[in-house]
Image (cartoon, rainbow, N blue to C red; front, top):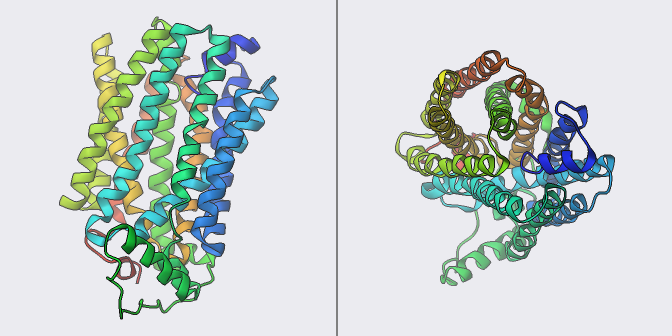
Length: 408
């Protein structure tokens, strides 16, 4: 929506600072706020795969609906429903990845999964740039929203071949389905006989998820600290980057140059993910999350002191590198800290907290455009610093630990 906003503003006559712009920027996040908590709990109740497929389908349908919206209220509704669907993919995807991948590979693969967020950002930035050179803004934004929804069809087709989580099926007493799922994985990997004569270990746990457990005892403390990490990181990240294109344009950049700069910043995210994938297994999840967040806090002040176009680009690229490295490590760390019966619910709660921060962040980010740059960046730097302290205070390292031992 950040890329589409100039065209939307031109078509519907929205002036700079119009409340409709803030509503449109927050509508998707509002949908994700509701969808993450809802679908996370549903996935723990009825299984991962059903939610896995349903949310992917709805994301395509509502994403395309936004491209054809004829009024601002209809566009707002379409973006809210798109967010509601996307919000469900986040907790379930990471829960399934954590439950499928072997312990020694789990950290880096969870970071790799998160890194495709950056790939999507790069493709959207490149598409927005290309469309801005070929079409007037009033038409380009519709093509952008429509094209951004279509890759969801590919994701849906891929997901049809993924079985449900054997770990979660066992927890729900569906041993035969769990065995069939593992046999499917073994067959695809060319080891069809690997399970001959072997019984799957059955977890000793109540299969019914009780979300209140996330707020009690040691698990409650863990949930609170993780929530602070997710909220602080999201508030600072979206507060800066959802308004950065408008900030650059207000500084005198042409629209095409804004898109090219944003594309470069998206490319800077990839090394952050690569380093994060290496560090989570080298020095551990806890130190990686805290380190990247601390770097983000420092660089927010470097960005504040930048007084040339080159320094603005360099410091914002470093900020993009640091914050996306933090996101990669957080997405690897979080699902490992919740028990299987509450893994999707816990991930959904964290994602909802992040979206709650996303609802607040555009208002704070607007300070970037109104001349209060120092106030805005000081708030965001403080968010990153507090999140770094909270991540370290969790006090648990999950590197190399089987999931059941981490959550015992």
